[in-house]
Image (cartoon, rainbow, N blue to C red):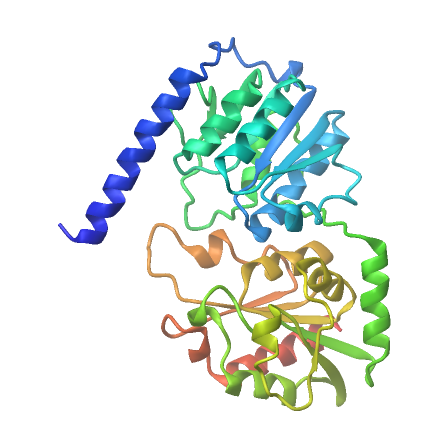
Length: 359
């Protein structure tokens, strides 16, 4: 057995023992039969610190609120809370950091709220901190995916991530279990940010020389999901609509875009993720290898060129599970693990198609 595999198994066993200890120290009463009609106060656990996951879940927040429920959301830090604070579908946003004591403090605070239901969208085995938070909150019921019903999660839904199933359809499953069938399938997202930030982004684009703007997010998570200098140069050089040039604005982590020496492109003046969202909302076309920005484009109905790695797992097909939930999207898969291996002519052809079709 390889050392890496042994380490993973040891870590999984340790996490299992810690979860069992948490359940013994912080026991929950065995809940009664789940009755969706009694759920009026609901809390969504979306604190796995992934922007894309949070954006995808906004469909559930909206539909639950429209159904008459009081909606709370738990996120993993202020950067994530800023995506929700202007959303009228959410009554309360709670944030905690990565340390155990922060989960304990939040759990005790929310225990007084007496939630009818906690919803955890993740199907992985919960961490020790997740069990501590959930048991301290002590909701009447807790729902999750692909888990054997126990004292932590008494309501479980099945989702095997089959080849044609998008992750957003978990919203439909959760809502249907609550008796809410109005959510479209696939769901549309509900992303609202500070209007002042949107106005700031619009003023920035109006200061640029051209009427239309292409927002280019050149880097995903890690070097394998980042564009090459050649790809960036080709996009900048060919960003036009019927002969009219686009402004090309680079967005992303400051240290990444500052290191890109491409003539003919502007760099975003915003350093936070909400600033990138504001630019996406007022841009005309988006190019990105990052799935969270793909979901931002879907939320605003923007044409997007999504650049993905190939799928190596015949069961879990990432390009479909977390692909564009957007009819105005073109998705290109790379030849190998490097998004940089996508040929420039394919990129330019896709950009022309998006421009001619949707602008």
